[in-house]
Length: 77
Picture 1 (tube, rainbow, N blue to C red):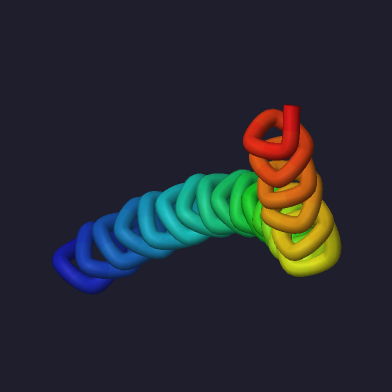
Picture 2 (tube, rainbow, N blue to C red):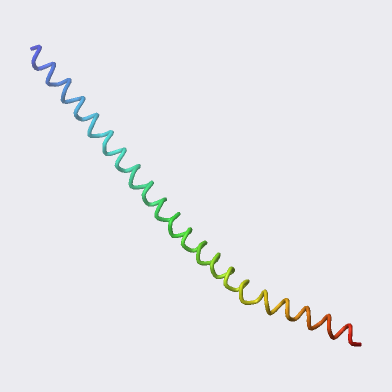
């Protein structure tokens, strides 16, 4: 009878372990999905950052030139 009780105890423990592993696996998969979404967002943010940096690099000299030309014209009046 003692051996049967031990086996039932191990069986219950095994079921508990399997259940916990399944729960943890599900949680891990959800976290992976969240990280994938965050990675995609970060790629979008990086693209926007580089686009704005490029636009700033192109248009800053043009803006400065326009301001200087405007000041020259105002001073020549």
